[in-house]
Amino acid sequence: MHPTVTAFLAALFLAGECMAQSSLILTGRFEYRTDPTSLEMLDNLVCFYPSPEFAKSLPRPKNDTRLAWFCFTNEEISKRLLGIPREGAKSGCGYTGQATVQVVEYVPYLGEGGGFDTALLQSASSVSKAEAMPCE
Image (cartoon, rainbow, N blue to C red):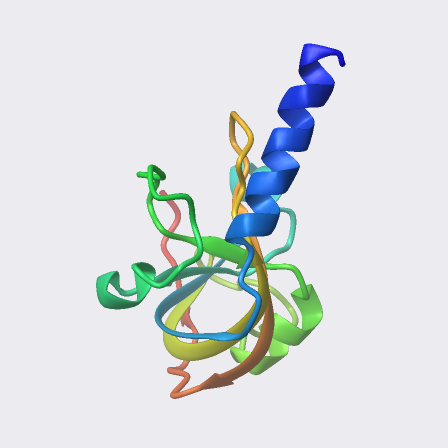
C-alpha cells in the first residue's frame, strides 16, 4: 500500500477512536470573528474555547498538546443559539461571550498545518450577551 494511503487510513482510524461517541457538556468562551484573516481560515464558523477544567474532557489523542478549541459545524444554528447578531459585527471584528454548550460529533483535527477540531452544537445555556470583539 502507498505510504500516503497508509498515513491517511491511520489518521482516519485515530479520528474514529478520538471522536466523541456521546454528547459533551462544556463551559467556556465562544467567538465569532469577522476580520478578513479569520474569515479566510474559519469561514463563518463560531468557535468555542472550553474552560481548563472542561478542556480535559475533549476526546483528543493523549499526546495532543494544542490549545483546546473547536468550531461548530452547524453555522446558522450556533449563531442563533449563542445570540450572535445576523448582520455581523457593526463595530469591531466579531463577537465573544460565555456559555455552557452541549455538543455531539466532536472530531479532533489530526492532520498537519492549520486545521481545527469540529463539533455539532446541540444546545446552549447560561449564554451571556455577545459582546463586540476589538480588531487586532
